[in-house]
Image (cartoon, rainbow, N blue to C red):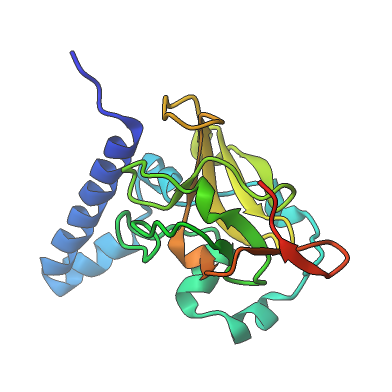
Length: 204
């Protein structure tokens, strides 16, 4: 008996959840109102949201929610600051594979990932096997009784996604940083800003 790979299972559960929501909208107005007000299934919600210690930590860029709302789009705020998740396969960087460049935080523009670390995972979200040293902070996420590892921008605490290990991908780290495209920007110039503020070519 063959079991579904984890990325395939995630996409199936997300599609199932979306189908149920679509059916609710096709019901009579009174019924739809009741269904929309009901809480989502915990297991499905845990796959596409996060709750971890990162919200209680302080970061160098410590802008308030009001400040973030002024510079982020509603979708960026939902994902970066409220730990949401974009639908699988919907992000502009999912199938983006440049030879050079750096992916930066969409909130504070801190460099996060080099283009050379991006790989095809088939999970529906951008996947990287490693981050720029010190750019990403990990936290244990125990939302809804599951244990996952959340990853956030080390500079502003913006939610990026989760990291998974031991899935068998042929990468140097055997890790998959599963990142929301909305959480990212891309710069074709392969430069990383050092702590002293000086720019330079990033080192492998």
